[in-house]
Length: 222
Image (tube, rainbow, N blue to C red):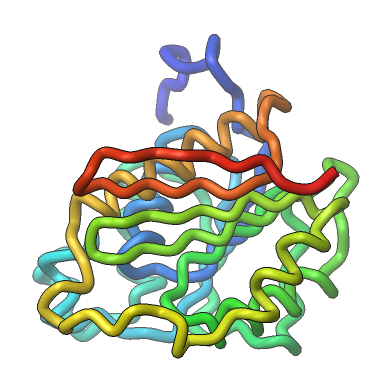
């Protein structure tokens, strides 16, 4: 068993269930971060397979190549934290019935996928703990996080529904990802989960330009 006493004075996540959609650049290391934070259970969704191109910028091992990302991330989570996971090796769309959890986290890499996920999140059942939705986005050296309280989400709906993949700058494929940005992203998500657990989180939009060391958070909603 993992001993969580060294952070119990900061937060306690042992009753928290999380739905994590995406097991790639941000998702793989986020899953391990949440496991080490003591999250009770992670419901993991991804339809992809680990490819050699993923190894330099995603938290997958060389031995994982050719296997489903949900399976390899599950194995890593168990090795690092023995956190229970529910594996779902398919893509989430608007018709997917997501489980009732305390926090939904999207770490996918297209606007179209985020729009489908958002529809699925909205129609999923609400838990008594006032669930949250985190939409995490990563460029080569930029991280963005939309932190949405699911009791007040009109501002986010307007943002995501009016977005388009054509609005995203088309970077060369050799400049689209870095492992340190993924690691920082997981840290930001972990910190947001900590604030949610301790009821200190405000809805809003976080922007972190890692190259220029510029960080901002804009509160949104009521």
